[in-house]
Length: 147
Image (cartoon, rainbow, N blue to C red; front, side, top):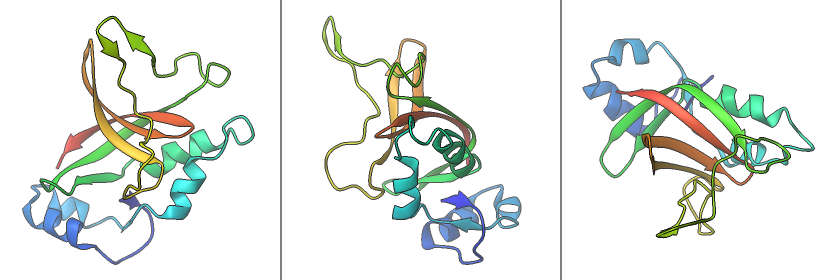
């Protein structure tokens, strides 16, 4: 869910507003769901369309991510976008083989998902677990608060 411009509240947010200690504050905002069109824009080639990095930051900063399995939610305060290739970003996500196996990545799986080619997941790293939202062209390090 992203903060933007519709007065309708979907069922996941309605439930969240009912139990969150921040309900009054959250209800002052307007939200729209992450659409297929937005997902496609977030996956445009960064070499041809570098503005996609800024678009992705704007879309995800302030977004509410709801885990539909356990109804837990996080409001994303900040989002740092990193390109997947060395030519786009030298700080890209590590990938490849490790001594004991394969490095886990945020690359979206090749299966049908709720949001095509946008895949939120938690990756365990040496310095702790991190919420990473992966697209085909970038990975987004997201920081937020539980609601």
